[in-house]
Image 1 (cartoon, rainbow, N blue to C red):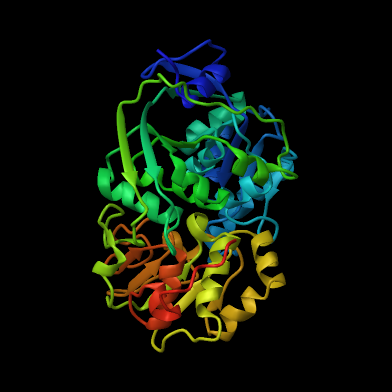
Image 2: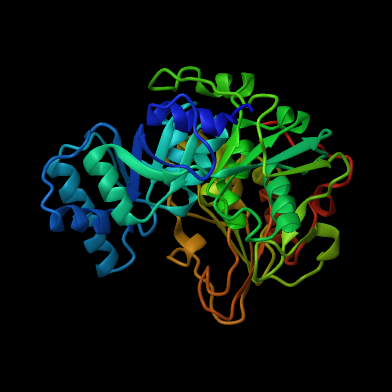
Length: 429
């Protein structure tokens, strides 16, 4: 029986010829990551254990992202713990506010994660990096502390589910729509502790950014990891940015999968997850006209430059609807800089949107646009559980950046074609 690409990666990092699903292994790690919320807990765990020597100061990334710029004294204290630790151990991959952004956009952008890697992050959306053809997953802060000390991680080899998509995505259909549709089909617990492998000719039409959006949200189905095989799109993305040599792994034709799904997406419309679960997914046509009070474009899911470009195309020369607020947050400092260079920030500000420095912000109900009681938001982020973006009585719809922006202009949930017309094709990123 053949091996999946994920099994091959884990076997290589465990020093084995092959691994079986359900097997427990110790895998060598290529990169460990923590943020301003999780790093202080890891640091305290290291201190309690009396550990004073790290595995590799150049393979540990600490990214301040969730509550920066600091929203209060407590978040400032959290960030200070991380800063002091990085200074003490001379951590080279320390990204303070103004230098980095959201880790799950930043690390691929800087070429710090490459195909064939094993990446362990103290954040649930660390599964994002699998879009590059590697194994990445989120762990608790104490587990991350162990990785920081040893460079290894104890793992159970997950089963793999295979998702195959056929057909060319239509206008306004993105990676976000494919993953929302998938979660809607299998449920928020449909991939518990499983690897989700995405394949099919449809992916050839998706950018690297769109692929990272897909793997970003596997955790919303309970997935342990996500994987998209590296190809020419991946290679083009990595050219000039990859910081290390990479190894491309492919699944064998006779590899075993616990579940297989296959869909033709050629007629798919943009998808929307209704409150209050990511699997309450319908086509946008079923929720047109729903009242919203705010719109959010950003997060590690959809705060990349191609997302900002599509949004700017829709809102250019228009205004945010009266009575609605539109928060736009580029995912990294470099994305913000590129958006400035292209004039996108001016377009958003002319439309009376609020533009913030790179931060997770409202995605986790942190700051910069938190929802009040009974408020409804249309968001490009990844979760819409009760209280996720603020007050427990608020509600969140999840959608792609084009739908979010069209809704910001219309003042209600809207399709981009309502704003631009049916014959307009979104600009290529």
